[in-house]
Amino acid sequence: MKAHIARNQNAGVPLALSWNLSAADRGILEGMAPAFGMKLLLVSPADAGKTVAQLLGEVETKSTRTLVLESSAYPPALVLANFKDKDVDTLLDLMKQAQVNIPLKAVVTPTNKSWVFGDLLAHLQEEHATFTAAKETTQA
Image (tube, rainbow, N blue to C red):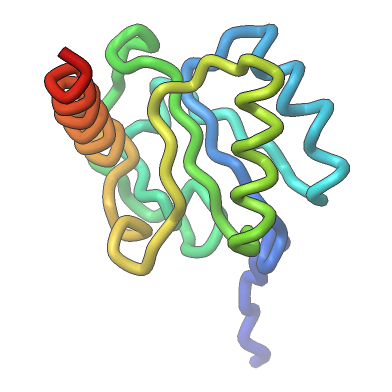
């Protein structure tokens, strides 16, 4: 009996998990994707209970936490995986030039890969609020 090993078809491919993007911002990112060999993966509210690794196709989706978020629960977010550091910087620069409005951004790490996507969004929102408040305080 042969064992069947599910292979991750996205291994090594630059991936962008996206949450709640406007049609315009999604279009801009899709236009940039070929330059990076990037796949844009849209995360639906029903998939918010999956881990980042599950969404990336790195582990089989056996059971997920029952978590369905309203799409308006968090602002637009982008979580990047399998990017070279210089490509992350280039992508972020291009997004800024194109005035893409995605307030929550992160890179997949060994730690956050095991997080439930909805929990990662909550953490990013908290960090963003803290950073924004600190920035406003220093500018005042």
